[in-house]
Amino acid sequence: MNFSSVSIIVVNYNGAHLLKDCFNSLGELDYPRDRLELIMVDNGSSDNSLLLMKENFPGVKLIENKKNLGFAEPNNIAASYATGEYLAFINNDMKASSQWLKNLVSAISKSNKDVVCVGSKILNWEGDSVQFLGGGLSFDGRGFELQSLPQRNDPYPPVLFACGGAMLIRRDVFLELGGFDPRYFAYFEDVDLGWRLWITGYRILLVPDSIVYHRYHQTGNSIFSLEQKIFLGERNCFYTIIKNYEESYLKRIFPSVLLLKIKRMLLTSKLNRSDWIVGYECNKKNKSFYDIIKEFLLGIRDNGLSYVFRRKYYLLPSYLERIITSRYVLTPKPSMGSFLALEEVMNNLDYLFEKRNFIQSRRKRSDKEIFKLFRDPFNSQYDEEEYMQAMKNLIKIFKLDEIFSNSG
Image (cartoon, rainbow, N blue to C red):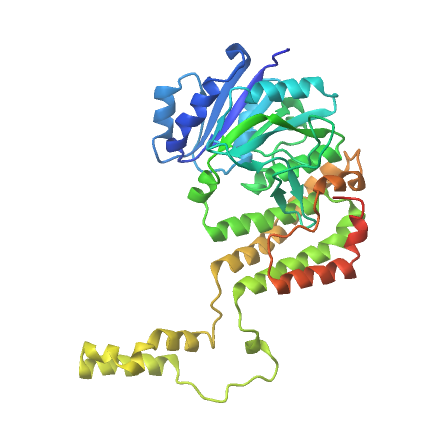
């Protein structure tokens, strides 16, 4: 076997509690040490990550960012410094099996030259369940994990994208195509890269005997709140479809995606729609917010704190909420994450279309050829009946089923 030179890249942010397991496993790889370069990019950690690395893993090259730059850009920074023929990306909350890298390099060296990227099988930390065995893509740009693939004769099945947390790619191709899009920050940047590779004539394969073990979302859950995850996910889905769909498909698909995003926003907002019905009027005149507070404070002054617990004011919080919402909308933060994602897309349209032009000008493979790798283009993580019915209606009206008729 030809042991190609490989630069292994790990991005870290306040992950000191994860690093020993990760780098100990990399030190036990069945791969010649002189063919490896280990790089860790630290995103301005405030824990003892850097001290731990310097004391325990002095052979690892450290790149120290002053602040958290997410996942995409730090990997790009490391790639620009790397010297290996290949780049191997692995998350800091993973540990590699001893054959992880060897099997990736073996698979790519046995394949045709257009195979420039291969991905690993990801198991849970205990190794008793599959987390990732390839990925699919919904028509709205949302990637999803597959736990199984259709039965095929080839040992390395084609996949739309490899998980960015456990993959190998030719360094020259990664740099040539711009790497991970730094505007993504985190989430779905691997989906975007995978689609881009297929568009430009390359292929990606899954290597089932290349195995890593994952502490599921250990990193993401400690960094991002729920509303931040929704913001990043919703925004990055838009980024992906705007950049990668062929123009004829983008024109047909984009209106449906936009309407469905708005539908999800409204469903998660929990708004009382009757408040917006034309001609709706409240039959009972409510006291003003000022009147309620004044009455409440005077009651405490004249009767003491026991006044707070009288039945009339025991329900004060809900009563105040009713008065406030007659003038303002109180909505859960997650729905606002979706709303702000749309604004971010609008603010970045110039950038997105610059990237789109770069990708489309290098197109060597039609989307129709790629759609079969979406696996399940109408996959949805939202199962609310009202949402699913809206999606079915849009699929019918815009004839989206015709676009993906030969996929899956």
